[in-house]
Length: 222
Length: 222
DNA sequence: AGACTTCGGGAACACCGTTCGCAAACTCCG
DNA sequence: CGGAGTTTGCGAACGGTGTTCCCGAAGTCT
Image (tube, rainbow over all chains, first blue to last red; front, side, top):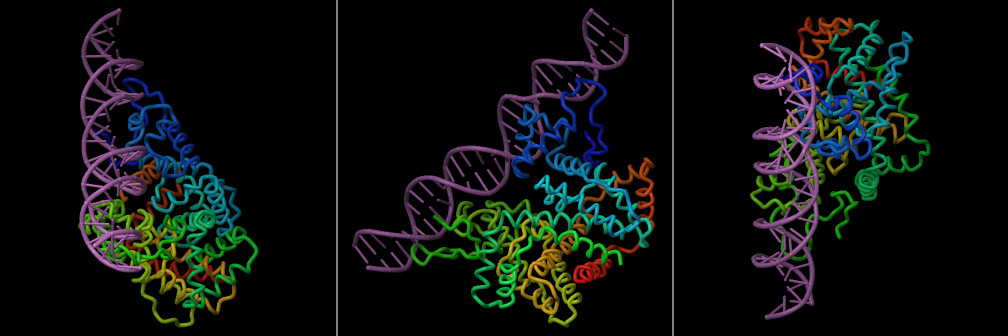
């Protein structure tokens, strides 16, 4: 009889009457974060999170209507850690700063980019970030749809950077091995040249991100 | 004893000796595509795909080393359908055209954006697209890393558009219900204004995508 | 024709999300 | 103070998942 089509943020956390709950929603969120940080997203199972709390697996369903709710809680919890520096009046710089704040959080939680990319959700903490972004865009012409679009793309682009940084570490031999094979075959000379170019470059891709983000935002707001 | 760290594209499809295989890798890929198109990504299980082929579930492991391989095959199969129009010499326009081709394919396979975003992989068909993109970028200064970055971001941005179009249909009440609550609470006046603005706008977001894509690419290449 | 190798797939294992049902624990009211 | 009412904790179970094992069948090669 619960309100299943309402987001978790609108469902009351505890009942006023009856046996009081031992744990709280933030406690469960923290346990899920701990499991994810330790073993990755795929280890965030109901039973694992419950074990982290020292409870039985079925108890979680008293706090959360399913695994999806748990993931929403996790994402929004990380949004609280995004640093929102004071605005300077320069929209692009201010948005880029938010993006860097998101990136920093995503580095701390390597499972986060995947979640941000595939299940856009807005909880109370994410709303605060959105509000900040809207303030940065206050002087910008364009209706609400444009601004919402800027917010969504900022999220997605930053998550893509974070994900690729991770992929560069974890999926190295797979992609590079095949690209190397393609290059060696000579059928795609442009890709052969690309790999040569990559081998020759020395600097890391990390310091390219801020500039690229600024350019994307500049274009998007132009 | 198989070469597990090699990508599937480098593993031989069939053995030269022994009992010949009844099915082929493309046949299995087609079956997986059919299942995904019909029921979504989460219905692409080994047993479901096998059932689509009329075989036993364990047989698939003769063609594919696991579910991940299957997903890689699916993504690369769709890359073959991306239209690659002849180049005009205008980098931004040419890249935007590729992006629109990707978008068209993603509309045909609603499970594709999620896969593209979360597991970047390069198969033979994706390599052709990459080659085309490199050709479009031939006149552009910048080393290989920049061009690879452009390719990755083009993929991600287009997938984000495709995903959001889908989210706008499927996850409507959830997000809007909560945003409406936030707006009504009056604690975030900027979000209240945003929702008013959204309610007032009439045109669909669909015709905004090409222009936004062009602007992003322009900024990225500047 | 026999040795060899691969293929097909039933059975089983460990895990998953989720539901059910019930004892325990608490609040509220008479 | 005691019962009625309500919610919590959670063991057990259901159906589904990816994956591995194993073995008979079906080919190829010598």
